[in-house]
Length: 133
Length: 131
Image 1 (cartoon, each protein chain N blue to C red):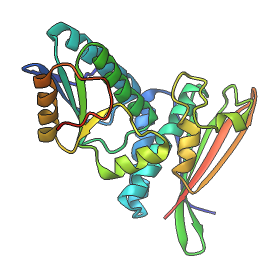
Image 2 (image 1 turned 30 degrees about the horizontal axis):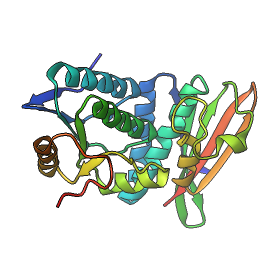
Image 3 (image 1 turned 45 degrees about the vertical axis):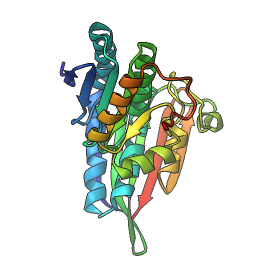
Image 4 (image 1 turned 90 degrees about the vertical axis):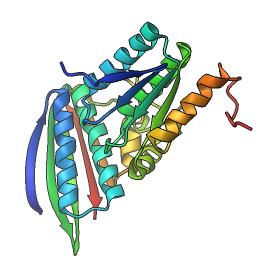
């Protein structure tokens, strides 16, 4: 059950900047440490850019979630792009389809506590992350 | 489109990144810097990122590209002022920025550039230690 929930569009590169700021302000609201805030915002940036560059745009839904006494932030990045044919390969360090360094997915996975990816070729990709306080 | 200002000071170019950059802005900085190095024959580039709250793989790649391109153009790049939380995150992300010289603050960064310019071209990249 989400305590708070908002959805943001990611259509242009300024939207990536904007969702980074959203991630920052929510993480600050939950009083994440500075390092945890930085990791969370960096993961947000990587995944939002993926949504824009690979997914051709999409949305980020942010939720404050609870597990017992612990609170966290869940972010769901959703696009209707071409999808990922081989998720295992896409999650490997150094694998790139866009001429980058191939750290977007694998790197952001290391920066959060929970990471889930669902993708179907031709139908789009959904990446869900949670960082607990 | 907005641009990040580049200051020319003697043989060096100084850049202070103070805004949360979107990707095109980062790309234009890369282009502006390389064309200014060529135009002024600059020997050193100092990039201060003390106000940057995150460096993700895109910005990290842009910084690595600037360092590599300026080296090809006979200029040395020093990155200064990285926040500790940013450094921790960057390494965890998988980017240790090899090949980029760093300094804790602008003052030390300028010293490093000065030393480089005084001693001329760098000897083959080994450990860069000075006696």
